[in-house]
Amino acid sequence: MKFKTSHILSALWRYLNQPLFTSKVAVILNPMKFFYPYQIQLLESCWSKDYALEKNRQLLERCWSAVGLQSSE
Image (tube, rainbow, N blue to C red; front, side, top):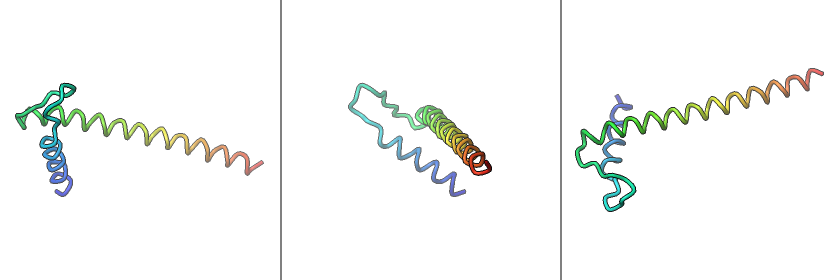
């Protein structure tokens, strides 16, 4: 339940802190229309973090296997 509450609060925070007077980003005034692009952006962010974690995990495994090979010789 806490995750759902924090997710809603972070979405509300992002909605309220939209840059109003910039031409780079379109302002979405309807909260229901704002939530869909927010979900897509959140998914892309989580996906990129997951990719980075997996990449680092594979690098760590390669380093450990290289150290294991050197110590056994």
